[in-house]
Image (cartoon, rainbow, N blue to C red):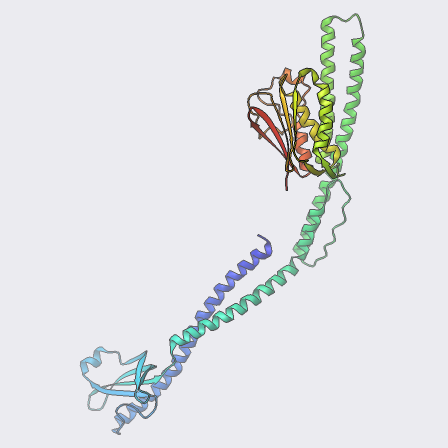
Length: 432
């Protein structure tokens, strides 16, 4: 979830809680104020009636011709002693003039005259309907809440979006930053101290990584070239020694093994250099490549090399598989997979190459047990069941499938391995 949405949701929840609490407080405060005002009026009304009654003046028995009403009756001393003398209540009373019940605020007052007789005086005045008031307040608050909510969201989104502009510019710059290439300088002016610090830290970190990247790339290139020269010189000396007719058969065999080991070392050196170049993104001449066409060219070359093993190649060209990738990398990818299918196949075995619009697959006979799909693409992984002597004879460096995975990652592809119907199956599919 985006930062803007997270902040907006949290503010929305907090605003809802605060507004709900404020609505309850407003309702009870308003009702308390209304009751206080009405109670003061009822107290004055009751005191006037009690004063007239104690003075011996004649008073009406029920009302004074208005919506305000009173009822007075004598009560016993026992009732007066066990009953609270001043009581307030909200209830419906019958209004004789209107011949209907209405909500009213009622004050009940117990007093005693000079003769010792207790009287209970009940005065009432029409009051607001609290249920109607609750409903009115609820809908009023609901409307107010909606307006406030929309206003808060709009203000928050606008404010947060403007505040986060430096962060968005920084993220865009980081996303466009590419190692090994010339990148434009970070232009992200801001007066927010935290963003200034973040800009400095991220820019320095990426520039430091780019410097290390350039140093690593230069070191790998120099090391590769420096190793290649002594390897080639040593191989030349050994080949010259092989021309010596005085060598015994055992010495000739040892020299041949040494030459073969140096050839493997030279090939491994070139493969490691190529793997480093691929992972460093030094192949960026991307274009649409038809894998079927490239595979046909590679198969023609490999079938001539391994013709003595009588391996049958079955081509299933359904629809062309096209990917946007550097042609050099595409050819290297297919060469590694197809060579792997020949090298690790059985004599007289079979290779099935299939091209579809959504995938390109290569299946080959070979070892009867599946390989570890989690480790097969790691550098120098040869499998638990692979004999080292057999691996040496096959001229395997253990980097071919690592190159395949690196090329696929560079070209937006994915390579999968499965063991189906007794064959090792490698599939290339588009990540999208």
